[in-house]
Image (tube, rainbow, N blue to C red; front, side, top):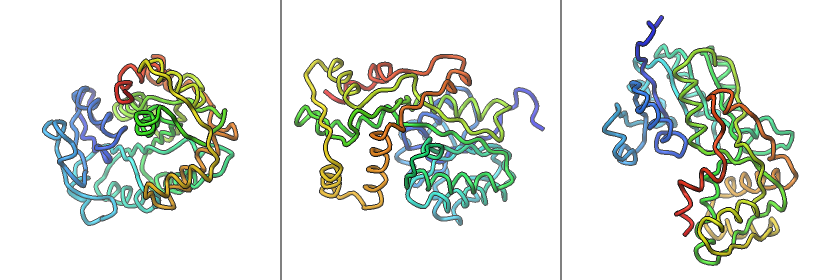
Length: 290
């Protein structure tokens, strides 16, 4: 058993991404011992100098031993269309190294009645984590506030956001809050065997989000509810892979059908403070749309 106050070694996988990067920064701020597994250490920037860095790749199990050796807890973000294999590789390496607890970033799509490719990928990955025999905690966030950054191009060039979500709403969560929950789960007891659905505190349609961005940047913006076929055409032209296009369109259809607006109090329950609003997120990131 670890003594009270003793620092444990925490491995972060996915530290160059939106949530993983915030988890890394907050763990460093909390004075934790941190190691990261990354494909490209250069992408860590200045944070790379504050932690142990191991170059490796979840798709290549032979590169994982050095990253997992001596690790107590793991935070893992999976990306791609074969999440179950990646989750299996992570849990195999974790078991081999004697890791005690694995925390996985999943998706709230797993608990929605609206079946999606994204949901299925995460259901399969969660099953691998749960079957591993390790202590686990699974975080299931809904729409990220930062997803709106995909609109930057059309906002800057045309003052318009095109999206096939109609009046459907989501409850956008600030990735900083997801990371704060992850850090709390990693460094405090009592979260083993639990899955947490995480959302922001308010349900907003895309048109309402666009109006808030418009107010922040001080110029008029328009939301256009485009047909799904037009959205697909745009993504094909942008060169996105078919499996990704299908996953995005299904997520949009889920929101349009009214299945994205669930609000939970979990962030507040775990952190002891209110979840950040979309307006809060815009205070830090609104300049990106100007």
